[in-house]
Amino acid sequence: MAVAYKVRGTTNDVTTCEQCGRDELRGTVVLQPLDAEGNPDGDACYFGTSCAAKAAGWTQREVTARIKTAKNEERERQAAERAAIREAQRAFLARWYQEHYGTPDLHKAAEIANITTVHLSGQAIRAYRAHQAAR
Image (cartoon, rainbow, N blue to C red):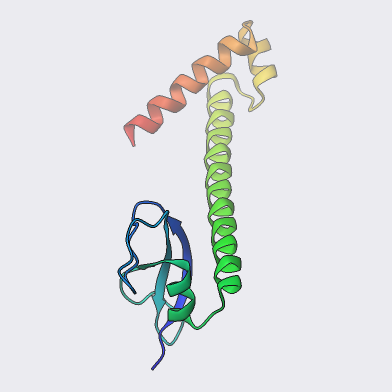
């Protein structure tokens, strides 16, 4: 039975092909074996591009396209993670302003406190960092 794979990306950490044993490669393709339902099945494999194509039954062009797709998916995942962190910070700061000054708006809170927005946001950001450190 042929093994199905998904390209997870490339790495420079492993420079030996597990298929043919060639070493000192500039990098390897990280292939994740999949079960019949398409779920990860076992540990990732590290192949040179030619061996990755042979093992998966793809052309080298398909391997290259799948590497590009994997890199794009990782970039999108990281961007979504950063956006979620920014949103969590924004929500915390809005709650902090609301709790301390009765409004979630930085500018209105600074006006109420009769201090600059820079000074007030510094206080709120320190509270956010303390909250993060306590987690």
